[in-house]
Image (tube, rainbow, N blue to C red; front, side, top):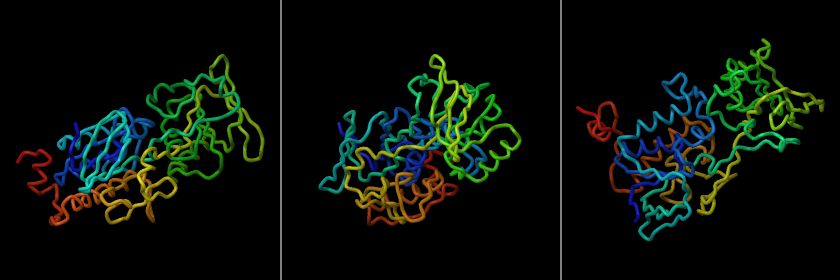
Length: 341
């Protein structure tokens, strides 16, 4: 049985979910495919408890909470979800529509395809060091699903991006101690987070190190310490009970790489009017796309999803006139949202 729909969205992260909403406002139905067993992308898989500070009207919101709110927001549009499967086959039909099949045999016929796959079939960059094989993997963490599990522990947090700094700041009052280890002096995280971290270090509430992980020490599988080599090539030992590794994600487009799209450094090139790819009717939004001035922010992905929805509507019906209708006042929007008069 083939599912027929207006658009298929590849990726169920925050941008993919918001794409459902923007399409729904225009009266378009979406089916969503994701390789993970649950919606939420990186937010749910890697850092569900991570605080996010740059979502409009939310001074702070947890990553999983954001996903929950997005799911609530799109509920009036009843999208179809096909989780734990990836797109194996992609074909342009003679009528210009697209035939999609997944690794579990789901078949979808869609008028447009929107790729919102983040970094693709992402995997966190793994820790490699001498002695790692002696450490029980339970002591090495690539995501935080329960912050209280680190209560009273000595933590070594590895990385210099937003995830490493955010969790350093978040766990400062949970852990017994925190040692932040980054391979260079410059950080990639938000300047405000870096400044807060340095203030905590100056106050003696945590320690900051620059260097690389040389060796790991364990006692009957239990992590006891890391040995680092600093920028002056000096060795030092850091006592710890757990290592939290936030070295980013290794991008892997998976089967999407074989779709004959124009790709630059494992990112899909799009225009900034429609966020359309080199294939008419195929669009890309969020971290997976690239264009001049691109900023990898959830906020940017939401903007891209809004414009892509209008472009999909135009692609499906080129002769139809388009109107911007406001959700505050439009009876049509109220009806689509399931609001009562």
